[in-house]
Amino acid sequence: MSDLPNCPQCGSQYTYDDGSFYVCPECAHEWSKDAAADALEDDAVVKDANGNALQDGDTVTVIKDLKVKGSSSVVKVGTKVKNIRLVDGDHDIDCKIDGIGAMKLKSQFVKKA
Image (cartoon, rainbow, N blue to C red; front, top):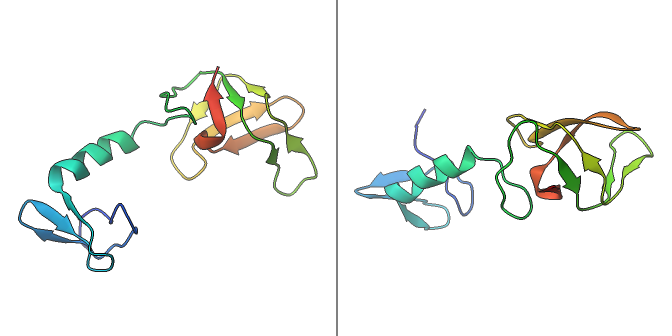
């Protein structure tokens, strides 16, 4: 398997090395290797909806009504969530919400309090 990064525009895994650039054969997007290295460093930092970096133990506020999968309950706008824990994956915040219990949230739906 190749250790080249996926295309940042279309997500294609078929990128190839072309000198000081990476090229995507599916969408013809080209980007420099330096930009790819910077993107990897940015991915390690979890950011809220406003672009603020989040850390373990932070308090965040929900900015959108969120339906709870498998339940009829809803996490309302303005709900404060204390003592978050950052995890890898699509839902990058692990937390407990009063009245609901343990949940995973996406960082794009919260803002740092």
